[in-house]
Length: 162
Image (cartoon, rainbow, N blue to C red; front, side, top):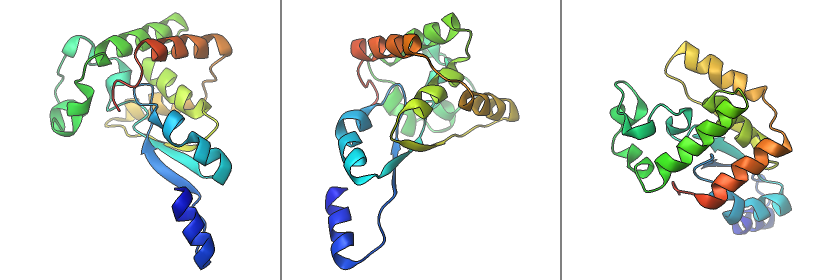
């Protein structure tokens, strides 16, 4: 990203303002891979997959394969979510959401929204009910206590879906 910006400046081309990467509770690689560049270049993140292919809703706990879900409709792409520690991490995040009377999707979206480098979050829903739940996640503000619990889970299960 830095090199692209340098060349764009050198050639008088438009400045890059955002980059689009997957970012969620199961994949926080942006934190260590690009956040520093983001800070120094003022290039924000358009975070996609804030629900981790639907896993962070909790609906796949214990490897349930539900019909008409992303994992059943796109099994090849969903392979990355069938790795070690994914189920354990998801279960831990779901437990935190329930502890604070939040839906797991709301916790996941609120976390992504809470990151200083996120300029917008790209959500996807297959039903109106899912869309409403996702939109409600935008209004959730996570306090320091919840964020500390999230960070403790991340420390135990770092980036199981890179």
